Length: 528
Image (tube, rainbow, N blue to C red; front, side, top):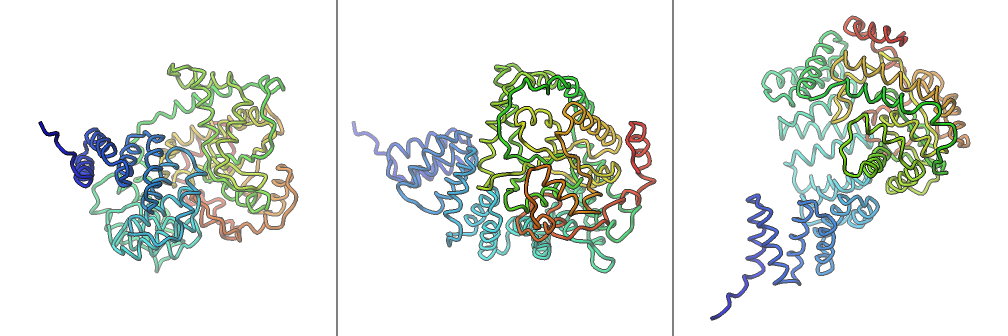
């Protein structure tokens, strides 16, 4: 009896891709294994196998198989895929190196340029991302996705006019790309003669998707505020925020309970010197509520030649969670139990592992900034883990803070920000925790007020540098000349000299914010 000859490699590859298109990844993996077994020298077969393994989160195997493909045929497509596998496996340095080797190459098609651009953006090479998104658009002018992504990169690099052109192109190509309307509104101050108010209102009238309406209402609120129609601005903002809140499952009481538990667990006796942390003074943590000026402070410090602004890093919380999970040994902890468990971890190991985790985000400068505002929750734990680290807390007028948070449409974080009553409760808890940290570890956290920085940038820069044990450098007061990309909501503002128009902005909405003012005042928080 004659054995059936194996199918050709092209037939097997077609079967793999057919299973992928049908959504049957199990059959695709089986076909891929057959392809690799019969044709071990077929590079494309190993690439398909790696794609499937990455899709099913088997990243070490995905890297192993793409390495075989690259060894057989070092094509640009395979190398881009390899860089993506490295990034998803958490090897930021490896991914940056792999993507950097491809930067500037005349790739085969627009899609490949777009994939490389996204990789370069994610590893922090914004100039490279801009180059390859532009190359992708040169090859495919009709892609709304490429225009949208280039708009974001241009914004981070400070090119507001270029970003606006790309957002306009995105909207023309795909009118239901609602995030583009909001992104465009944030780029500049709209004027009575140059705005998109009518277009936004017309688009709102014909939009039925809640996610789209949310984006459009926030965009309209921003543009109406710019042209000084404050009642209509707040009405649109309230519509967007209320709709956003209605789609969320969130209980502010949970967050308040966590903050109260932190205060109960981390009492003054925890900071009596018995806990051994990791002896290192490389980190500066800039913390606070969002929209308080943390990016401005980061920009001032990051303009010092000895300081690397590493961005908003989640590594401290991730490593803390990893260590608590190890203690729990598979047992699911309640939030209160989680806080209790943090007090039993090895703080020295926490500090050391945190520094290892952030290494891919740093350069060779001796000091780096971690500007994740939410790290205020962990200020005491940071001090225990890294007693030599510097912590800077940025504060702003409470009502200016709450209004700025309320009018910002966040991607994922800060679920308390879409209801003014919940926002008031959360702000009061935040204020209580910051006062607690000052009481239990006096002198550790430097508090900087946004209004003071605006009034005296030189004096506050001197305070900041002194606290961080850094020598004076004039570039810190010329922070707006720093060309480094900023990926926060303040990306464009920090490229301008300081202005005071954001101070007291809440007063334009004093009537609408009066319940919030009363709520904060009742909590002992001065608002004027």
